[in-house]
Image 1 (cartoon, rainbow over the protein chains, first blue to last red):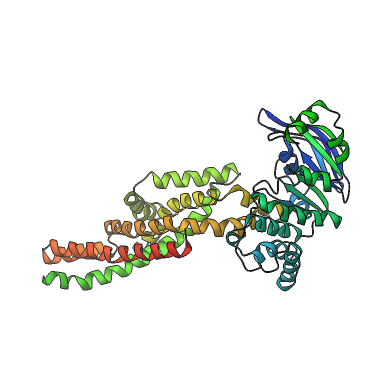
Image 2 (cartoon, rainbow over the protein chains, first blue to last red):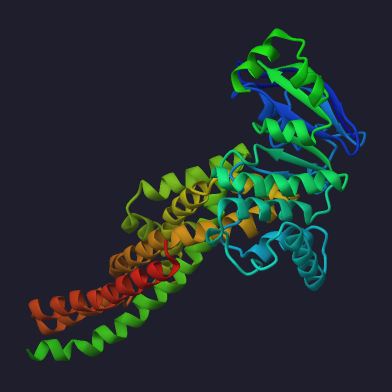
Length: 240
Length: 213
């Protein structure tokens, strides 16, 4: 579904990703772990081209995303993204946050878009917040709205960039629960996270990124239970 | 005392032009400034340099020079007879446009990068992201400096007495020339400007408070 082929990303002289190869299959949940600055968020952001790709290629359903002939907006319609800082639109209420993309891009009828939004809000447990503004919500609620907003485009893949890192501890679970439900429904998900419990429980494969390389990957059991690489062992030793 | 009363009809005639030139000029200036400000954020080098050159030329020259250049200079060059009020409106529009361009640029740049990325990530085009996501947020932040620019431009219209546009200062001057008295007419001219600028400031502050900027 997503094929990453020799992906290199540099900022000037600084090479952040040094040649990553990986293939995400449909309905897989992939968790990417690694230290800060390892390049894991950059890798995620290359998938929907929020970062320009320096070298190599990424294909989503066999369409090369970094081909100049590819209309990146067409790709992004099918790739939902959830950010660490939520990035809800503060001047719109929850309903408008969710409906803007389907209305403006899919040209969905406003009434239909609203119904969809209410459906999604119920799904993330915020059925009563449709008319609230983001500033009236807690962090956990904002992140759940952000997930609903991304789902409104009916994406084929969801990308999560440290979705719980900016949350107070008591709000982490409500967000992870929504993500678990999504995983159960068969959504293809790529999640950059520090939540090892989540990775262990939900991920099909876990990727350990260090120094711009994909150092090791495997099932949660393999990676957490029997890490092969010294660097993986050192990293897991520090956090578990 | 009598001159304070007698000058009033002159100034009331003048204030019509002051208002006309300021309101139409600043409104056009806003349109120019919106494009030039966004142009200064453009990835296209040509657009960036065009807009930057415009802003630098206008900010670097006195408005009095600009109005004389437009009214006399351009009329001379193009061989047309530009109406004084039209020339004044053009001058305010071009002058305010340059300052508003900087307000617009600053307003857009003050918006968190995450808002652009969120717009991109849900599949909005750059233009849609700008229009639906960034612009409404930036505009709110632009209101205080825009109000400021309105007051500055309003006062700048007094310089157009140099080309004999019948705005407030010109009318006051005309009165002094006929009446051979200066203190009271010019006092009233000042009072007229304050009578507009002080309420404008108060309204502006109320709007800011309501919008919570």
